[in-house]
Length: 106
Image (cartoon, rainbow, N blue to C red; front, side, top):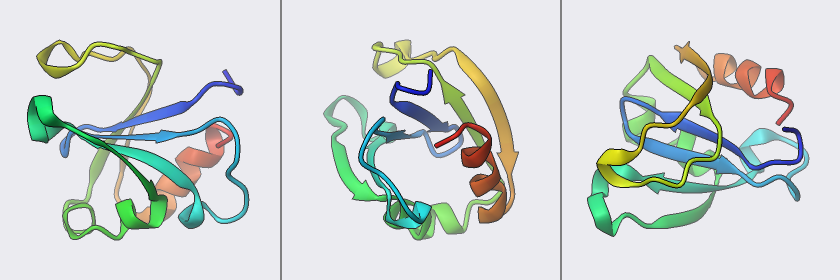
């Protein structure tokens, strides 16, 4: 799975954060990711952002702990979105999120 896009679901916030398989090096905060806010419904849009923008978003910062699911690629959207999680972790600090990313070899 190391050559596939790595996808995470921030379950309580219903955000998807997708790490492309190539192109990111260095510190995690500067990584380019695709962010999808699923709460926006059928008009949900994908935004290319830096991971820093996700993690420094007030909604993210004020909502700890987060349940983060790492999942396989899943094409269903809307209410049919039920990914097959490979691992789920409860994170209470940014350091715990870094540990999760390290464990998955991001």
